[in-house]
Structures are given as structure tokens and as C-alpha cells.
Length: 187
Ligand SMILES: *[C@@H]1O[C@H](CO)[C@@H](O)[C@H](O)[C@H]1NC(C)=O
Ligand SMILES: *[C@@H]1O[C@H](CO)[C@@H](O)[C@H](O)[C@H]1NC(C)=O
Image (cartoon, rainbow, N blue to C red; front, side, top):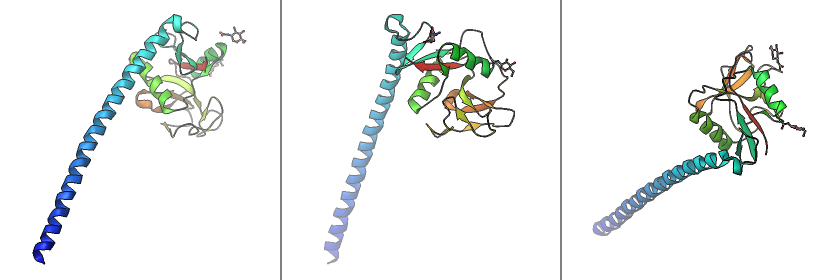
């Protein structure tokens, strides 16, 4: 009896060890694939930026970037920092608006552009709580979390305009502050 029990337990134990081993191997494989995907995505993003900056392929006005059926304007590198409302005015005059960020891919795109211009500490985007303190709304009138579960740091009643920083964080800032901005429109 004891011997049989031992054999059964031993068989179960080796099976468990085997399963554990398979899991580890699978996990390693998956991690590797994920890393490859991330690297490929990064390369594709770079290619996309290069292609869209080639004016022959451009669906956007000069100086604008095309990305996913939209045109984006980044004021970076123009030495032309503006207040939030003046930035918004600039966008309006180009038939666009301050950027409304609608998903994490778009956020990643904006972050990629910011990384390319490393002197850019932040960008004005189309997000404000000037209408009602604490009620952040995107330019299109939607609530802060309508598209993504984002938050605005440092909110205070004298900081009614949102700036986008590295890592995808949004900070409340005085609308009177001067800075670069991002416009967006359909292509
Ligand atoms: C922006 O706001 C400032 C002061 O808050 C004001 O003087 C200026 O006229 C406004 N500009 C636009 C384009 O609305
Ligand atoms: C904005 O749109 C209007 C009307 O479609 C057009 O006349 C104007 O040229 C456009 N402006 C810019 C800067 O694209």
C-alpha cells in the first residue's frame, strides 16, 4: 500500500515539475515575442514618421505631420511660445483645434514627437477646466475620462489649462503661461 502511494505521489510530483517547466519555457517565449513586437512597433513608428515627413506622401499642409487620418501641427522649434488661448486661436485659424487625445496609441505618437524634440518640456493640448473648476473637458466637449482613464495633476483654481508632459502625464498649469502647443485636424 505504502509503496503504491509513494509511486502515485512521485508520478504526480514529476508531472507537476514538468508542467512548471513548460510554463517557464512558454513564459520565456512569450516575453521574447513581446520584446520583438515592441521593437518592431518602435521601428514602424520611426518609419511612419519618416514617411509622413516626406512631402511627396503628405496628406497634410507643409510643416504638419500625418498620423492615422489626422494632421498634427507641433509648434516646437519655432521659438514661438504662446498662452493657451493664443495657441487655441492659432489652431482655429488653421482649421484645427488644440489636440484632443483619444487613445493610448495617439498618446504614444505625441510622446514620440516630444522625445524627438527633447527641449520640449510640455505641450498645450485641448483640455481645460476654465468653464467649471475641477470639471476638465476636452476641446470637443467630452469629459476628461471620456476616451482614456487619465487624470490631471496639480489642479488648482488658478491652473485651468492642461499641458502634456513626458510619460503621458497631464498637468494643470496657468493658462497665462507661455509654451509650445499641438494642433490636430482631420486629414
Ligand atoms: C488670451 O488671454 C489674454 C489674457 O488672459 C487676453 O489678453 C488675450 O486677448 C486672449 N487672446 C485670445 C486670442 O483670445
Ligand atoms: C480653412 O478652411 C476654409 C474653408 O474651408 C478655407 O477657405 C481656408 O483656406 C482654410 N485655412 C487653412 C489655413 O487651411
